[in-house]
Length: 577
Image (cartoon, rainbow, N blue to C red; front, side, top):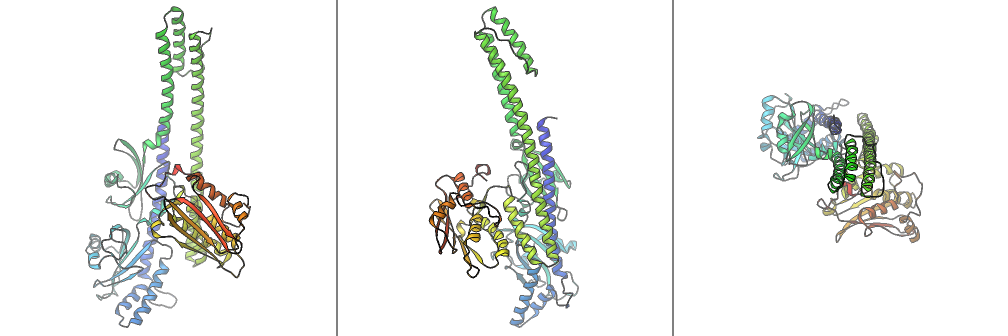
């Protein structure tokens, strides 16, 4: 087996394991949604025998008094909120009565119930007597108030199959939708081998989650994915693709990972070209000397050189040609000996590089295992806290999970401004456990630039510095504001606080790393100077960080960055982490 075959085999096994991990994570989320849906139908209060959600909704429909409707609606919404407090991906819930009237939670229904019931999945559920079905990704199903909004969402439908509800004004169907990217979050923090893309497909080959439509034809060929899991090779557009897939047990969806052979073998091909080039140069040198030889005194030594060259071609790189005199033939012999030595060095370097690459791959796997083990442990703590009703622990572990995913993820060094603020919220949640309500953080960014990109973890060190060193006393709340605006082709972000401030000399020293401390009170030790240097390393001297501060009146930190959108986003390898 060649080195290329070994490389392909290793990546196939590793990608299949990662695909299985993603499929099982998706299955856990789907089962949680199904369990919550089923609980809504069967929910009653065992302590005081109070009405369940379905019974309250039926009462709401029958009520004629506006105040009674308002009180029932408040109770229903509170019950539903407790069922789905584990996720922020829920976009809406609709309870549809037998006569096509409805009750909505969280947002209005995007289509009329009569149109919803005309869909093929509704009649199929009726015919097959299905109580619940995960519908997958549906178009024009997002709760935006517009029927033809072109948006997608993940939908689940279930029948209220209770003989006690027989009137046409009682609930028949529950229709729940989640954000389209609800499953992308499951695998967004998982680093695949080298490069790769993930697609989630229904049993009919329709995409549930996909970032690219170029291989839609491959996806629809379901005979290629007939087993529960496996791998296959596929040729497309003069390229060979390695595809691994795994089935989600609860929905029979296929999680498919696709990677190009060219990407996997590019390093091996580069080494082979170097070796071929070296040998081609040696052979060309030999031919030139041979055909320029005009005397027998030259021919015989050249023949000897040919014999030595043949030994090299057979793999004997320890052979050397004796050098006599100072003529052209002696120079040729010296050149040959030097070339053999360079080939030996090149082969040695290739072996060393190959060993280092394998060690890096092993370390990469270890680095993936440890954070994922920690995240899985945090998820277990969250579930236990949810079961026992310990909301503080649950919220704290969820915030830590989000912070770890954003900090440890290896899917790039860029994030959106909104994404950076989400990370900052998780950090602030922890700091409030320590300082209570002594500080607040506000976010004032225009919607048109909230999706612009910036380097990760630029704001957290600055906010941490404000919290740790900016508080005046326990009786005055620290207010931290984050403002962003477009200034020509640049992006300006200001972090403003009303803390104790500092002198201009102290502010300049903080940027120049003369005031770095060894305090371990923050979540990490990334300093303000580190933020300043990262910006300059990535974008040049025109960008960076400045501090404006006055003692007793607060501090303003100004970050000047290039304006980066989807079209101008650099590649991952072009940035310093």
